[in-house]
Image (cartoon, rainbow, N blue to C red; front, side):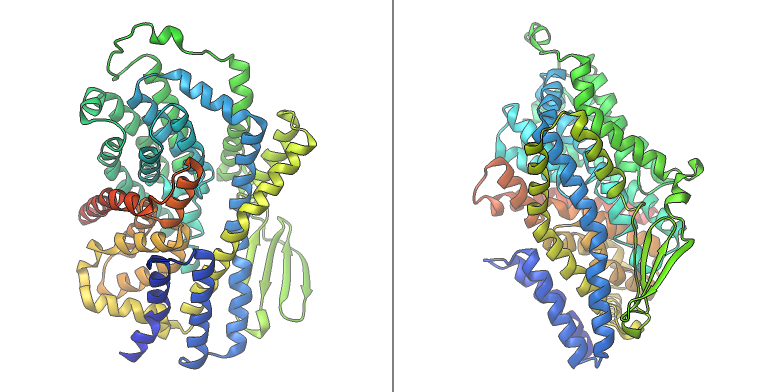
Length: 527
């Protein structure tokens, strides 16, 4: 019993620090929690100090993977913003449809769906929300809509990072990760039948929703059908390709007024500003290039995926504290860190950072005719924005490493065993909410999966529930937790100029989040 009490101290302290009245930001709370977890491992569990130090090194270096993806996503976002391409995209999207429900579904649902698949990490809200406010929608209502809408694609956001990286430390074979992706896509798709309808109510009336119900469903299914189909064989593309297909079809439906309420003012369509195709194509070119590169480098049959993952040794150096290995595909690996079996690796060419984000940015700078001042600005902006997320991720990953030391007697396993004993097979009704809790205090579905994935795995084993189903529910929970995540709420509020409304927003977004969890549990019963 004492082992359990000690094991849960770091998690309980983390929750308290990030949810108390004057909550600590994640870049402070997570490193503090890691420090506490390390202290408990050293003092109570008697872990060797050298093993702890090795895990500090491994955990800190592991943060390079997500932070490099975040940096690339922000850099591309800033490139589009500073170059003016983002304004062109906004004007083009505005010109497609004057119906409010149509605008909300095209921009707040389908467009954000695609952006989440490409970059994630809060980028959809940062891009879609200002466009909607520019169209005349209330900023506070838009903030709530952006938070709730950006939930369905999150498990496959940033080219599947929450799945392949967030659950990658559990030692699962690739086939099992694929199964988790398949199941989570089905759960998300079921929730998508209801969640967008409830979300639209934040901005428009039920009367408007009912009058445009056919278009809403067409837009939802346009994203979720390809999303579920792609998840059957890949866990990187469902949100990206599903969103791109859904956006295209939603635009076509809106252009031909399919499923939309007839406009009273017949002249509305005549007044739409038509941008030249060349102007729109130039503004969209970086995003299109990003999608093409991702597809080409992720489809195994094309051959590039194998080349980018080539582990054939090219260089080996003993650094004193570890062995450094470099492969022909520039995979950097450290093994035997501080004489322990702790290791770390980074796939330089395959992690979606250098390719495609940085490559696309370096091509876009001359293509969009950006001057030296603008180029300097995008790099300065990016550097300033990744400082605190990097600290938070380092803290999260070191904490996770500490919590997993000890094998069957690690704090993670001890906590999982206790949950298993408490709820037994009923755990599937709670699993998604644990994932949501992780996203609530960490600000990331990826970090939620990193933090609670091992606990969910342990519980599944102990109570005899299917591991893939419970981990899929963890992934869905991490995604739906974005609705109430304090970090995300602060970020979108800051972008839209909303002050001191965090509590108001949470009270309203928590309702669709709870419903999301209920739908997920219901679907899991049949799965």
